[in-house]
Length: 78
Image 1 (cartoon, rainbow, N blue to C red):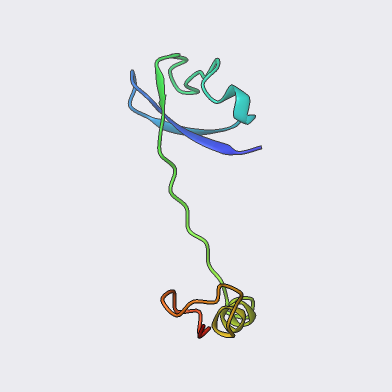
Image 2: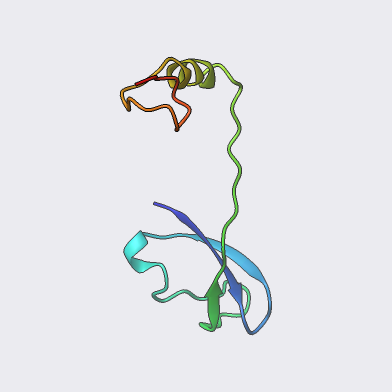
């Protein structure tokens, strides 16, 4: 179940809710002032990698491929 961020348009506070995707804007109530005058916010997140998992993927992308062209940078010469 995804986490959604909301802003209350009455008290200007922000809060989060775990909700099913089909119910993202149904019956959302501000936990601070009990208002239903809320707006969903754009959520930003970051993903980090240690690099171990990306090394094999990088090797696979530079070892050629099946596109048979010379313009995409895959290394294949037709």
